[in-house]
Image 1 (cartoon, rainbow, N blue to C red):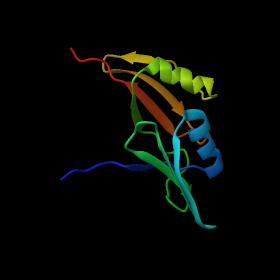
Image 2: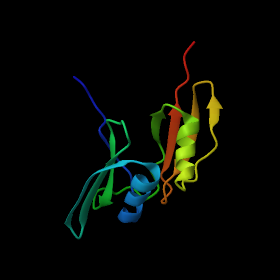
Image 3: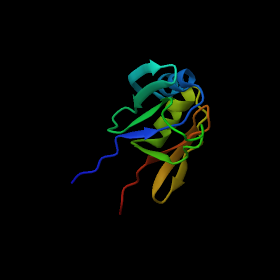
Image 4: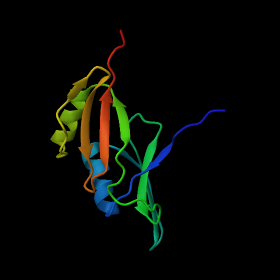
Length: 123
């Protein structure tokens, strides 16, 4: 049996601001945005090349905005990813080299934290 993670909820306070941040600044693809009612709106975005998407909106989660702190994304090049984020107005950390990877972190406007990891070759 295969188990695939395909959707992770990210709690936000302002759906439009979050969508603009992730699409216009970070570079995610806008897959779906549906308002069902005044109480329910579902937005789904996918990082380029990813099989897993994120979702946020109204009426979807009881998590506190900014409480998602553990999403890690594998990227091919930490310097290029950081340069892309900074060029688009995202406050990204310097590249942090570790024996198990090279890391860049950033947060969305609500404080949800992301970690980008460039894998290093295993010897």
